[in-house]
Length: 216
Image (cartoon, rainbow, N blue to C red):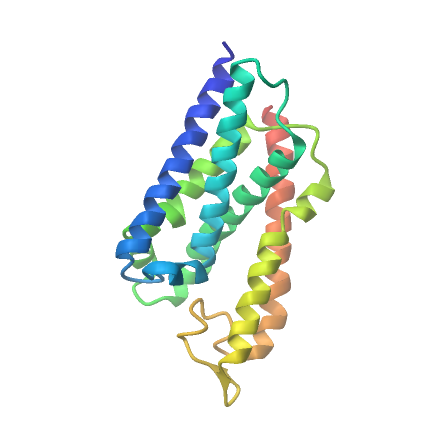
């Protein structure tokens, strides 16, 4: 039996279970900083990115079972690309929390690491990065796949911006509709935040791909 594949299967299954547990906690009991109950929790990229990573991990675990049982010979390229996207998105979430939101949100980092957000903002991203780097290196992915992996961030930024524009009054957006505070200084900041986030996400993808290949 391939021990490395088995460990990867266990870790991917663990990530998917952790995402499911954190999501259920947020859904039913979401309280505190950057938390909401019900479907309103989906307005946060934190939740969306973790759900993406959880789904990718679950699918990867399923395919790894097929590999271990001899019913499949190789994991498809589209799943590697999905895994890269999910890992990059939760990495972006973690970096945003550590280097931006911890400085701008009342209560700082401790407030952002409570309840489900401890898993969303730190533990799941770290686990996803470790699994991807240590167990999922493949030479099938190219830089083009890194660009494709950025699509979830593009879609979220469009939704965030449209929502902010719909609730803008006197040139300002209420914190209720600008929950990350990306445009609290004015909508002109969107012209900096949007390309910056895309560039960072693409850079994360390229770095993840490169390091995973080195460690493969």
